[in-house]
Image (cartoon, rainbow, N blue to C red; front, side, top):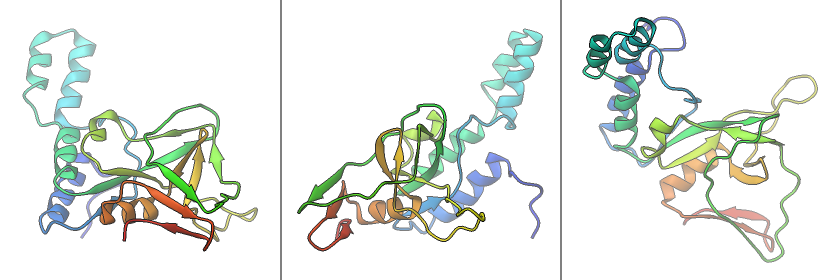
Amino acid sequence: ELHGTWPWPRSRLAKLVTQIASPQPAAFAMDMLLAHADQRSASALARQLAQETGRQDIQNLADTLPDADTALASNLARMSSVVGFVLDPEKPGRISSVPLLMRDNAVVQPLWGGAGAIGPHTAFLNAISGMGMIGLPGDEDGTVRRVPLFVNAGGDIAPGLALEAVRVWQKASTYIVDGKMPSVLIGD
């Protein structure tokens, strides 16, 4: 079934996430960057029109119209959800990250990284259980041959999306990098 051009409206994403949340999955990961507020919902369009015209009545109307970001955040909060962040190669920017504990002389090899990170819009921060990096580094020919477990986000070690989804599923509070038997331990 066709659903129109990409990117889909956040209202459509909110409906899809509602359907996914219904059977209460152990964890849900959304391989998308939701960095900015929705600009296409009825409330957002009315706010833009109110700002352009200076009309308070339209601003009052905007406050009564459906807000797709609020709906999406509410649906993400109904389950253990992970959304994406990306590395920013130039600008410092931080995201909240889960602690990484090192034991038995563990060594973390140099990580793919950026000066900072761009995470989800603030409307989603209280609704989600975690964030994982969604970009993939290509080799010199542009082919992606590896997926990073961790990245360097402005000096902070942060997980990839798949790893963070496992942590959320396991309800683990931290990652453990074990040097004795080189491995990453997550929950059970």
